[in-house]
Length: 102
Image (cartoon, rainbow, N blue to C red; front, side, top):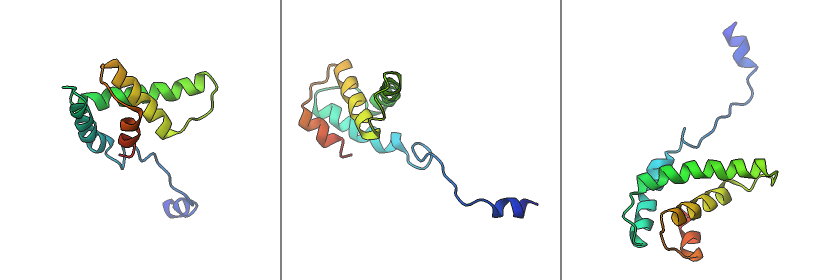
């Protein structure tokens, strides 16, 4: 019976963010470098935790305001800038654009 059920499966999908990709391990270190380069003593790990939480809020706002889907990278960028401002980290738009290449 299990074999016949499995034979009907044609696609398998899952969310790779945080499941396959280690976002914290990938983004916290460069975030820490960015912060240090811009005069902040905040750790990349602490910043990433706030950044990730804010990214979800950015995505919810798109939905609540019926703005459509801004896309993953745009909501990441907006959340990144929000967190920088929240922690009084000086930055330029160019520095943020460069960081977003990470």
